[in-house]
Length: 260
Image 1: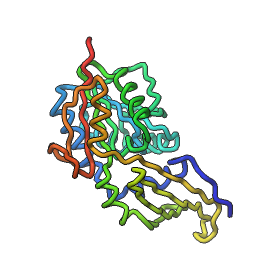
Image 2: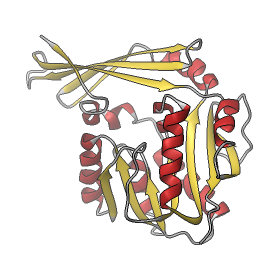
Image 3: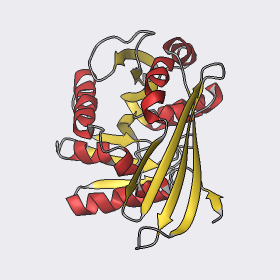
């Protein structure tokens, strides 16, 4: 059986919610809501970048406080998100968009991106493209909120992510995970099989490679210092606690201080 190399998240979209079944999206959405309410009174229009299958925006929609738009580069992930929103009768606008090439006729009070999405940007240039695109569509005083995974997180996570296997519906998968600290990259490689209804015959096989650039807090702050954003906060994990170099996940809160 020939194995095809697939664009990331094109095939994995079918399995994504299974892979993420242990993630507490409700808690994550509550944290994003807490950050927003702490630093921006009465926001209305909120944009999520790299939304995946829409779990965070779907949980935020239950608060009934925001006008939500969510985007992802993967059309397959966006389609899954739309299906879930329809099932839950959630009023969210979903669009396909690359967050290094942001184009929107609308402006927003809040833009956020979570779960290591920025780690898929492999260079300072790509991060700058994302930051510039957000700046252009943020309202004056608006917030950009994003998190990133640090070397400490990769060192802790690689052991339990490596050699993971599972299944959902007619799909089964196997993940290899490795961290290369010398190059500051973390790789997750997935072998995905689409099975026949008998559960034994492999109809199609796919190979997806997910490559993340792992940034230290010092590196990220160095990049941000060269922008026009005002750094509001840097939080550790899911608490309003100041992050440091030992933090595994850092959430940055930046304010767009352009003129009206």
